[in-house]
Image (cartoon, rainbow, N blue to C red):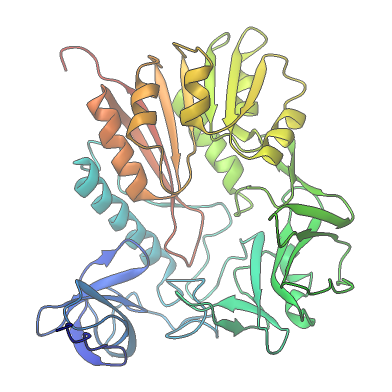
Amino acid sequence: MPAEPKKSLVGEEYEVEIGPVAHGGHCIARTSEGQVLFVRHTLPGERVVARVTEGEEGARFLRADAVRILEPSKDRIEAPCPYAGPGRCGGCDWQHAKPGAQRRLKGEVVAEQLKRLAGLTPEEAGWDGTVMPAEGDKLPAGQVPQWRTRVQYAVDPATGKAGLRRHRSHEVEPIEHCMIAAQGVSELGIERRDWTGMETVEAIAATGSQDRQVILTPRPGARLPLVELDKPVSVLRVDEKSGGVHRVHGRPFVRERADGRTHRVGGGGFWQVHPKAADTLVTAVMQGLLPRKGETALDLYCGVGLFAGALADRLGDKGAVLGIESGKRAVEDARHNLADFPRVRIEQGKVESVLPRTGITEADLIVLDPPRSGAGRDTVSHLSSLGARRIAYVACDPAALARDLAYFREHGYRVRTLRVFDLFPMTHHVECVAILEPVEKGR
């Protein structure tokens, strides 16, 4: 006899005490029956009424929104954004928290991930526990930094209006203005026009140039609209069959400035979203590595060559840099961006496949900026065998960073310093730069 389906608990409400913050933009609570709740729109120490948004009886945990705040935290403020809150836009996690509290919560998440997944205390990781705001983001509570230079809008199929997705949903929250969008994005006026037939509209405002770009993803069979925006802009489209990005008019790339150099980024390729992020991360990496003239270096998951260029500039004419990147367009851009460095080579492919084929058996310095999933045990093992005197690990996910730090420790590397940056204000995301070095014999 088939088992009866478990009862959905969606819509059920529980009055709960909110416990610690957890990775992902929510806090942990428990029902009176002991079931775990991951609750959004709340803060540690609050007493709230939490309404279940996902989950069923017997589930390992439930997801919920705090729909009534019974005892607020001293760190709570009224969310500046009119689209923030239960059931609304899912782009921001901490609109209801003071800026200092946001950074403190992010620090607690990083510390918890380090302890749980790498067995490291902040002191053992060379970190003082602080999360540094980006330059220009030190604003009073209630003010929102306009930092997001790349915004992907979803289009409501019924109205053709641009908006943002609701949390863990395909539903579109129509908006008139995104408060965290950079001024260059807001100036395009994406929210004010009809995008009927489009799935998404991505707006890009380059840092250090006036380049503006819109990338359209049409629904099957839809025709592209005539794009007449409030500012000069190039337009690209995503091919619905191949997923490739093609130029409609204007440049197929934008020019981004960082570390005193201009970088071509084509086809909506990866570039740090915060206008200060690229310079902030280059500075942290170079201060950690302290490159010496004539050394050899690897830049893995190198994108369009941000760190490879910074390394080449500091290693001099006798130094050498190998970059590896899987994206074809990013490799083309990296080779273009680094054409004035004859001792820089960029190879295309996955790091775990390309690096063993290079025949490289040693390197002085390594930079890796892997995707959110991290580098993984096998790649860490290979990198550890190269004998680098220092390794810089740039991470957008503290859990993946902690897992990989544990692997590095297995292979004789320790964390010398860790720096944590709040390059995504109002969200739960954080950026880390860990500097590793070989453990001295006898330690």
